[in-house]
Image (cartoon, rainbow, N blue to C red; front, side, top):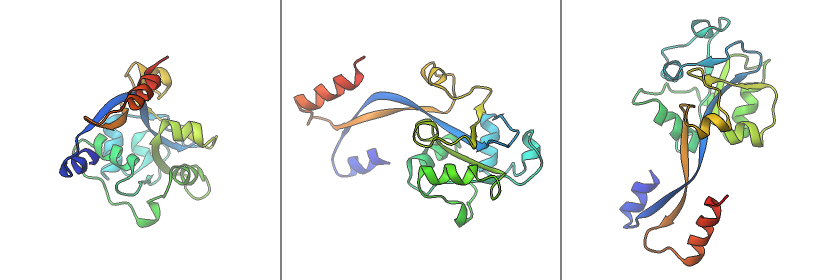
Length: 181
């Protein structure tokens, strides 16, 4: 991780939580599945659940997209796997960039059985695409409220990162401003 890399160089990073974001899963809007449990998501990405029919959808092989190793989204997927091994995605299913993963999952003719993931901001703020549907996880739909009240299970803090002991007055002023109303 970045913290370990910094420590190896003798640098201690200071992490200040400045926000919270949801890690979301989405399917083609025509997929009848409205939600999954956290364990079903893990089992899909571990290769133990391979057909939509076993999670309440129409029968068909699940096409589980992944991101390249080292991307923020892939790191988050690995974290929520809680030690379960990820299946190896076929090379054509490793999609570059947030917009790419959303567009390919939304392409009904070519990928009707796709599932993808991203952070909520990218899925709803940067790519306005009515062809995907966000999935509820454990019955909780990702939203500002469920992120704020921590009921949505796949949410995490994000941080302003500074070098411990090297903070300037300008750095502190910027962080204070970010945290202000």
